[in-house]
Image (spheres, one colour):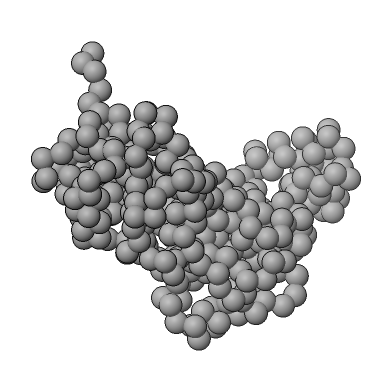
Length: 339
């Protein structure tokens, strides 16, 4: 702790000490250290120089009261272990740090009553805003937040069109995955997607159709987000008389199952059939025997944008779409040429 001499030999440096040393009032010193506009540049610089020399550390609570902010953001999630949530949280926390704020994290673990009580606890702590991070990209009922505290939904979507929801542009990702294969000269594409009840799976399939509008219906297969489904669906595709030369998978698990089935059947990836995954789950897409071309949803940027919406003043109502990034790898490009 930074100290100055006192009756017991030491005490914490206060703003009064800084004001006295600088020859200004306590109010002026407060304005200077809180970067208020109504103090001259020369005075601000002198006060800050003396504050630094004395080792004055502003009290965060007092600064918050002056600015009308607590400099904390509440993040409420129901799945801390999910591979999507962790990346969103990383992006949000980095952006919160740039705002010189801190995070209050609450995990409901899928329990609605617990979520409600944690929401109330965050509001009682007067956080500057709340980010709701869902583990699934589905439409959800808005939380019952009353008053001025702003709320932003991340990954999941509020059913209230006046709310702000930041989500990946998965339809664009599905389209870009198909366009990547078309750009490589692939003519006969197929899509192996997830559940027909899933918003994300449906949007990826719509994006695929945007790029290949004349696709035969038997080349769009829907099942679940599993390696087993990728294996089974690929078996159906390669058994057809006019087998595809390119597959867009609904996620990296499906893509890994597809690649394994192709290689076990004696087909070469990508020479015979190229494969694109989705999500960039690197344990599957990057570290296997055949690295898989995939679509990165840029979840860190999604988390950062949620924070920017909180601190940016007027929030954008409706859905804010984060552009994806296609990551080309061996499953579509083949082995790199020798150096």
